[in-house]
Length: 206
Image 1 (cartoon, rainbow, N blue to C red):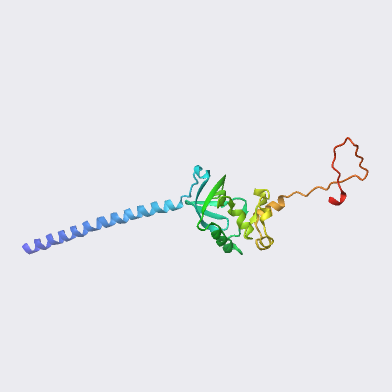
Image 2: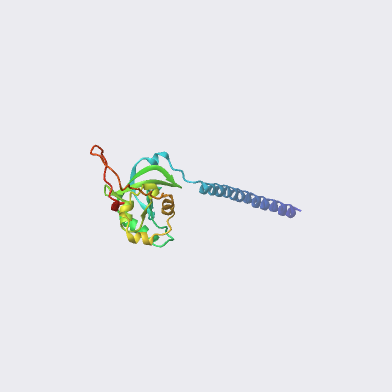
């Protein structure tokens, strides 16, 4: 009889020990699930651009592609230029040419007060007054966006770049927006008095 009670007591102790170990394990799994859902929610949060980001600042640049860099954790879209995307012809070459332009230098960023998606739009400089966007255009790996710049960088474009970089939406949009130039009619029998302050128009110059 004593042996029977001894076996029962041992079984009760065994089940108590086993049951006591399972509870912390379940609690740990519950805590893990809570942490996992919390981290997944954090990943879904979109980065916000602080209004103070629109003040000029400087730093070392990490190049994302030909017309996008990253400084102090903020993405910057170079204002007024368009370089090929990485999956387009000359896209990778454009990126590494930008790497050569900013490598080992401090980049000075002057935001224009606008954003493009999650990027600050800005004109960026190295070596004091070298516009890195204009420099990339000069090297034949980007084009001007006339609809945004008014043709600020067109003089730096190369013939090779115009031939290589095709199907740029911004330039197509700008070309469609151009209005036809009206023709100027000049009368042959125009009489000009000495008191009239008029510029003579040569028909050959029209």
